[in-house]
Amino acid sequence: MPKISLIGAGSVVFARRLLQDIMCVPELSDSTVSLMDTDPERLELMGKFARKLAIDTGTNMTIEVTGDRREALAGSNYVLTTIRVGDSFERDIAIPLKYGVDQSVGDTVGPGGVFKALRTAPVLLDICDDIEDVAPDATLLNYTNPMAIACWAIADATDVPTLGLCHSVQHTTADLADYIGAPRDSVTGWVAGINHLAWFLRFEQDGVDAYPRLFEAMENPEIYSRDTVRFEVMRQFGYFVTESTRHMSEYTPYFRTNEDLIDEFNLDQIRQDLQRRTARVDDHYTQLLEDANSDKRLIAERSEEYACRIIEAMETGRPTVINANVPNTGLIDNLLDQSCVEVPVLIDKLGFHPMAVGEIPGQLAALSRSNQAVQQMATQAILDGDREAAFHAIALDPLTSAVLSLSEIREMFDEMWTAHGTELAAYT
Image (cartoon, rainbow, N blue to C red; front, side):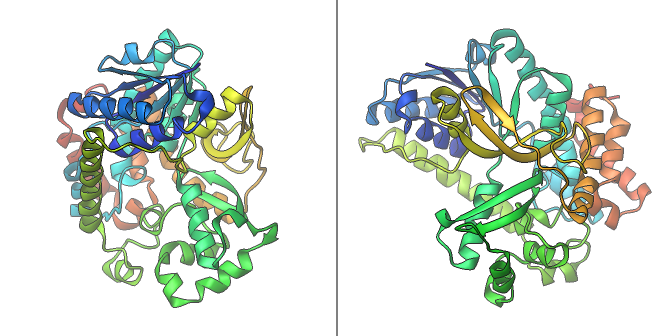
């Protein structure tokens, strides 16, 4: 039976989903799950919950809990990473906002996303070093953002087989089914691009093109108001994108450059979103605490996450197709070679097999490449320890460059760098 290691097990939402998913697969009932986190309190709680869940669901799963990363990784077959490294609203969001760069999330793109990459990717590379040393047969399933930059750096610097996983394709498919009034299991999509800028190249219901119905639904003001940015992008570029309206608005220069646009597309959500995310995490932690200490029998239900589906397919040989982030080895012809792209991937007993898409429509490739320029320079900054490359990454960001002059970008960049103190001392 496989050993599955979760690095960042203190993530109360994701770790719970993973554990429940695994315990729904009978063939994985004798697996070992090793939980590791740097927060002892959260780690202890997740371990307690995991052991109770294993007992209540009748599995024979072995639960290991450790604060030692190499111990957690040793002999692992599958490693899942869901870590946060120094994320800070004050540094990543508030400083750029002071200069006029109004990010909505700031963890995968823009100034916030680049600085998150500078902090986070080196830790992921350290994890990969450990994997190569103590778990040479492991497959890495990375959930940590910024996804494209992190996976690009991992592919360039290591030999660890890696899939970058997100749930935007699953969530968007459900959204599209809702917009056209179709059952979720009746719609399918052929999706490719880059993470958070992947495109529904085909959208069908029961094998019939459903795009005409989606364009018709967009004309309904109530439906349009629920997804303003994505519908506007579809209206102008012809295809629906995978990331949410709130997040998609910061990937382009079209929606967040002034207050009128922000009001028009109902995007004045920074503080509300921060408060909502904080409250949601607190609610999940409270629920986890209650469940772990309750006499109530816990029940495992499958989520939409891909990780367990990958493990199940590789262990049982029952194939599945997911969307994942992988190196562009001829998969999308008009995106950067060796960049990180998101494409359909077949998973089976032999491992994972990314599918070639060919060219995507030129306007979609161009929009994606504007973000790939940021990803390329950020990856160079990480691999070379190059502070100036990090500045160039932010200077090339579509939203930032639409708002600020180069000298203003430099001033903002320097202030963000100073706010990190010694955390970025490895960069010169």
